[in-house]
Length: 62
View 1 (cartoon, one colour):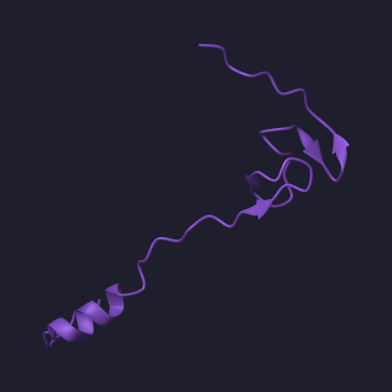
View 2 (tube, rainbow, N blue to C red):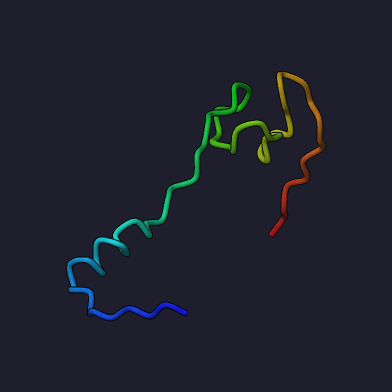
């Protein structure tokens, strides 16, 4: 098995690790209630998808 024969510098190591960034979730605005939601999914706030009521949303009571 091949093993590295020469040491890699800190800059080469850090260049390799530079692409481990987190990403923000892709969100779109619901056309019915204007809340942010993931694309191609029913809205968790109003329960609509593609202009139709799909799920019944129950609000939490404190």
